[in-house]
Image (cartoon, rainbow, N blue to C red):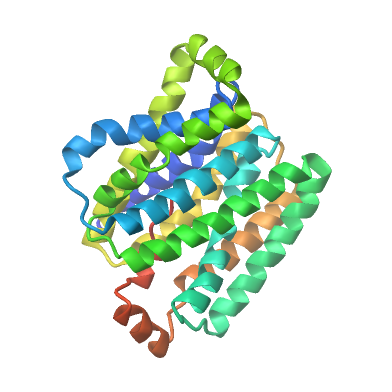
Length: 308
């Protein structure tokens, strides 16, 4: 990759890592489901006028929108609101690579080789260490919700493989339209109209900045730049940069929010990032690759398209 594009990939990882800090700040202003709904509303509605018509079937847009937008982000924001630290959330969420590999083996008949299986085992060991650390420093519910969010992310990854969108930004913008109404409805039902209205009435420049960052910087710029890199370079060249996300997430949470990073958390980070690297970047067996291609999917590209 050219140096300028390498710098762009690192910048996107930094943007996505810092996004967890911004979410943590945003949860001081908004209930979690309302914040998630506002993110997709602001990201999607202006952007649909610039990306053109959807380039894949609506069933794939709806499926990914439900799994990623409603389930994954709803659970992530709620888990962080329940006390899951921003830095630890950025780390634990990477277990999605294991869920993706397992679901791909079942649904897409992608047979993981020994390297991938080893990577999954290492990543799961990292989750176990993170769970021990989380159990001593945070609520179990928040940790569980973030792991569930990672599982939903794995589902959305498999659906994205099946959809095989030719334009990642176009696909993501239209996916962002799906969760808006359901998330607003869930917020009214679970968080209450009084709490939502109070948050909107108290909206200040800090809250506006949070929404602008998570919607436009993290979502529109992040996925636009990532899609641009994937169109210019092989996914195997781009994907490793996503492993920097928890590094930036934990570092920025420590610097901005004052989160303490224990020795156990560093150990969990090494195990998780190493395991995810083996799981995500190991080559697919020839038989599995043939099956994936015949299903109209692009395994490597899908793994290289994380959602933050």
